[in-house]
Image 1: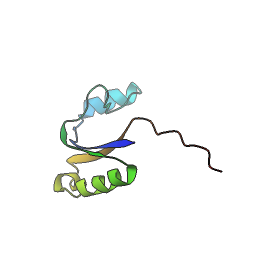
Image 2: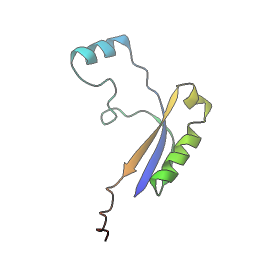
Image 3: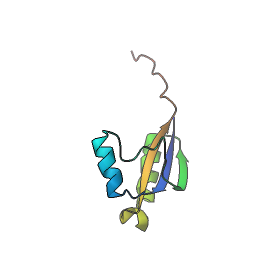
Amino acid sequence: MAFLIVRTDVRTIDLDEISSAWHGNRRFRDERTSPEARRQTVCAEDREAALRLARAIAAVGAVRSGRQRVKVVRLGEPEPRSPQR
């Protein structure tokens, strides 16, 4: 199963957006309607490799200071396992 590791800019939120989201019972950030700007993308073949790459990317100064974030996204469904005997 493949994984996508993405480094994005953190989008700022105004107080008005927080207030309207809180009172409207909706999310502050919805990646499906307005995704954050991508800075870097990397693919990995398994979860362990994806997490290792994510940790390495998280060492970037902009991520450590909170201006950017790292996301790990699973691409596809896991393969069904055969019964073990």
